[in-house]
Amino acid sequence: MQRLTRRSFGRGLGALAAAAPAAVPRFAIAQAQPRVVIVGGGAGGATVASYLKRSAPNIHVTLIERNAQFTTCFFSNLYIGGFRTLESLTHSYVELKSRGINVINDVVVDVDTARKNVTLISGVRIPYDRLVLSPGIDMRFDTIDGYTRDAAQTMPHAWRGGEQTVLLKRQLEEMPDGGVVIMAAPPNPFRCPPGPYERACMIAHFLKTRKPRSKLIIFDPKRAISKQAVFLDAFKKYYPGIIEFHLSNEIDDFRVVSVDAATRTVVTKSGSRVRANVANIVPAQKAGGIAYRAGCVEGDWCPIVPETFQSTLAPDVFVIGDSAVATDMPKSAFSANSQGKVVANHLAHTLAEKEIFPARVRNTCWSLLAPNDSAKVGANYVVGTGSNGRKMLMPTDSFVSQPDDEASERRENYEESLGWYSGMTMDMFGTPA
Ligand SMILES: Cc1cc2nc3c(=O)[nH]c(=O)nc-3n(C[C@H](O)[C@H](O)[C@H](O)COP(=O)(O)OP(=O)(O)OC[C@H]3O[C@@H](n4cnc5c(N)ncnc54)[C@H](O)[C@@H]3O)c2cc1C
Image (cartoon, rainbow, N blue to C red):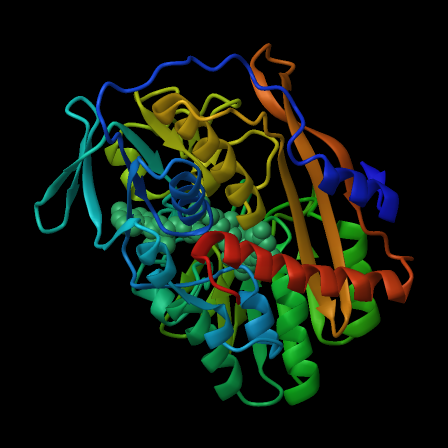
């Protein structure tokens, strides 16, 4: 991994559409209006809908999303830290509808890949020629003793946008000064690798400015984390006496093994037992439930063909975003958006004979450490052959912030992240953030 320089970052941005994918079969469906159904109107799904309708207006695009409004997980840590309002993170599908996309706010409960249709909770069946799944994640409630869906109402994971994030913030606001906040970080792989540590900074910023006698204890099952040097530096520089970080090592395993929601008590494998005022428990994760119904899951995630994101398990189904095994690509909104563009382009080409633009997928994750201090990590990804002989997405031109970066560079990173959020949500919903 490269140290971040402005030159290396610029080079990455410019390379968005540059690598050659494997040969794509050229055939068009023999019907006037091919039907593409997309399940999940988040970072991946909304991007596919928006790009596909724009590039191939004759394709009938249906986007099925559980919620009428989408509150982003990305930037939700900034809401916890007091840097964003919830309203600024909440978006509607009105503009996508006005562009001719058939947006249905409902839940898909089943997928029949043989008959090529999806079933809504009402029993209505919707046929497709191609199906795109971008359902995000589900929590693995079977991994921490006592951590159930009900317990999450007392000890929020806040790892999905909206309700859970609001609950965590409210608990922080209501706790006494001098209280204890516990965060259980998830094991790999999980949505947004730097997310727990940006959240730690944002919770600590809130405590420092509003409840300075309080403490945040982090229990982590991992031995190393994303942007580790930068986060450790930020914890020491901005939040001494507030953040207590327990990363696992060969002697101590700090995975949270059980919780008691009634007393908000957390127990780790290494034997620590702490009672908290606020407990933010982020468990292990898996592909969104509907991917299981579609028969696309192996283990906890969905294997895909890395050039096209086609499922290797179900015909005419594409899986993008957090549910997919995009090998080295982190599970992020940036990744999901970039994968969504690849799939939209592939579908426009194969269903409507539009030109194919060879695309290189890319990721960048920014993390706000303190006011005007943001660190970033990222890379481009190209299809290569892994050590197991399988094709996979591999990073090139990777970069990462360093503890001794200039303050001006960190401030620029922050401004860049604001620009990314606006561009990203414009891409997804067609309206400015
Ligand atoms: C705290 C936090 C901070 C983050 N910060 C960043 C960041 O700074 N940058 C970044 O790039 N990423 C960030 N992320 C990660 C990012 O939010 C996810 O990686 C991204 O949203 C994944 O996109 P997706 O399309 O796979 O899933 P989602 O965006 O979650 O969309 C899935 C959608 O599918 C819908 N759905 C699921 N099943 C069904 C069904 N059966 N029927 C109908 N609808 C269904 C859901 O309601 C949901 O709206 C962060 C995540 C967290 C938790």
